Structures are given as structure tokens and as C-alpha cells.
Image (cartoon, rainbow, N blue to C red):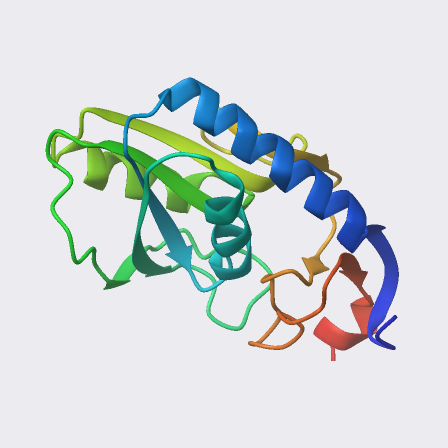
Length: 179
């Protein structure tokens, strides 16, 4: 375990098993129809790669980068699109793949933006959802894990661009981000 991590809450094996379950559920729900996985960079990168491999059926990938955190541990509520989609989504089945649902402010903005582009369907898959943290209601069709309101890193999630490469999700020691 990394010395900056207080404790592991989701091991690599637990994550791998749940991602396989999500992939099977997505494949069944889309029933052979192509689905465009839109990963929200950078946090969802590892998750979307594993998820895409777990979906048996036609999958396409595209990426968006948005910012509302900067180097903070709390969302600023101000969302900026840093990288937009390369593909058009009109008439397509779109599944937004997010690393963590926290306040919901960023995702609400993103979903409103994508809905205006007239996809056939628009759903959300999040690896993590923080229990009781949402400030706006977000309907996630696919949720990997419900977690407590703690600052977590690993499996793509970061603090100041560090810890993304950890194969597990762990709680970051407060001394690291309060310094």
C-alpha cells in the first residue's frame, strides 16, 4: 500500500469483478446496438479502458475533459470544457463514463450539454458514487460502488495528478491534502 494512503476501500480484485459485472449488464441492455462510451478525462481513463473490454458487443470510445476541481479536494462548481468530443453523437446511444459522482454539479452540466446534441439515448456509468453528497439529483443507470464521503485516490482518481496509477481505491491521508 502506498504510504500516503490511509486504507484501501476497494481492492483490485473487487474492482475487476464489479467492472466485469457492469460490462455484462451494459452488453445485455444495449443488446448488440453500438454504444459510444464517453469517458470524462482524466479520472475515468482506467475505468473506461477496463469497462470497454468487459462489454461484449460493439463499443466506441470518445473523450471529454472538464474541470471543476483544479488542485482542490472540493468541486468549485464552475465547469469548463477543456476537450470536447471528436465525434458527433446525434442519434447515437451514449454512455457517459465517470470516475466518481460527488456533488453532481459537473455531471449535470455535462449531461445538459450532451443532451442538447440529440443523442438517441444518454445514460451514466460511474465507478463510485458518494453517499449523500449530491447537491443536484443525477440518475446513474450503472453504479460500481457507493462509498462514504472521503477523499479517495487510485484506479484513475487523483490528488494533484498523483496516485492515478494505484491498482486499488484508497482513502488519502488528510495530512497529504491539508499540507
